[in-house]
Length: 100
Image (cartoon, rainbow, N blue to C red; front, side):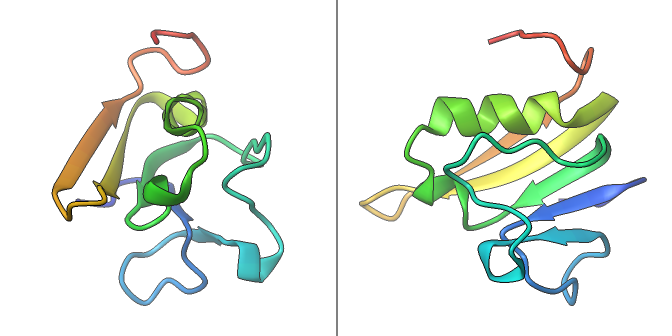
């Protein structure tokens, strides 16, 4: 995952790995299973461990997409119960519209 432009880090309490704005339950600024909206749209959204914990994965992916700038990208990693890793790249073709 290559961070470009403005970056949101979902489920990160620090930005030691990637540069960007951190959002995490421990920071009291984001909860994965709430009706969250980030304070601004981002060019890149990265979440490496949180998608697995989403009660509604479709809603989580839609919220990530809705918080991307037009042309932005998101990198998400989802680990299933049998340890297969699925990496999802989302492109913000037109931010704010529903393509799901």
